[in-house]
Length: 187
Image (cartoon, rainbow, N blue to C red; front, side, top):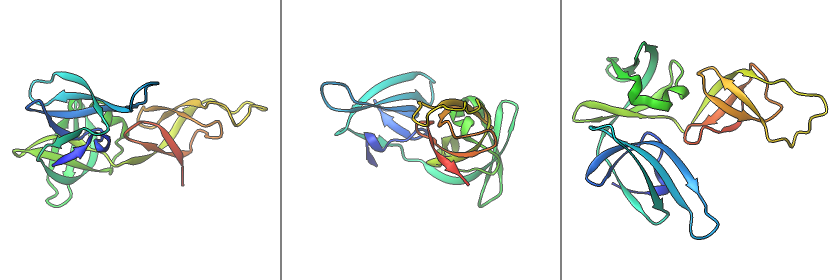
């Protein structure tokens, strides 16, 4: 299935240069001259080599034919993450190194899509956003303007994001899993 380079998400599996690749990072770049493009960092599935590639907005990529299954993240167990199939209730382990940075968005009971290729798990696709609790951030300084650039915050999974000055320890926030950026406070 062909998809636009702009529609590729972190965790997607694509066929490129005759190989199967997992998208690790995605960035939108708008240079001063010329058109915008997408910068993708990808890891080859079998050999583990990495590739940084740029794609223009008109480029299309071949999304790999995989069998998606809805699964629930249960817990981290040493170097593995344990997932449960929502239909058969079977549990399976995925090595932490295969998840890379995606593990920082996982809380117990998070529903994800696990992609299988020839009955072996290739990776996961996260939901578009997740809600995480702030466990550490700087306090608000009296007289500081609200138009500031934000402050660093550490979330319950170890993820670090920049949040507005009004966000406090204990607040739950919505984070974009593609960019790792703060979106809004969550209830």
